[in-house]
Image (cartoon, rainbow, N blue to C red; front, side, top):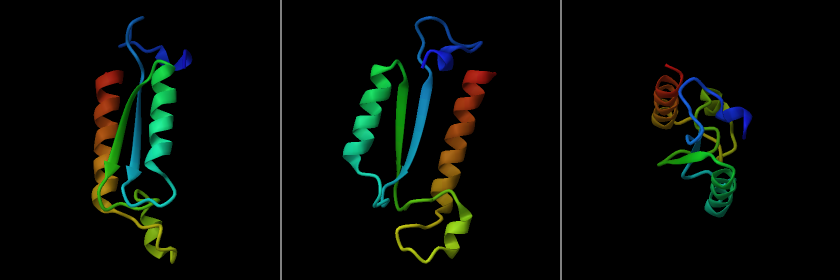
Length: 96
């Protein structure tokens, strides 16, 4: 965590931000697990943003999931775009 806190736009009181994107229909990631991860990261000085993407399953940002026969996996264009846009926004705000 200490290494992540160093940036030209941070000071000793700011926290690095961790984005977590999860498909709301992902059968592999329980809400309780997301809550535990958020609590752990928050206790280690991270600002945590969890984005639950409605209608998205596991692997939502990987277009190759369209060929996966396992129904737990699926590409979700809306979720992929939302997660990419949020990531770019965070990078621009912290690295500019």
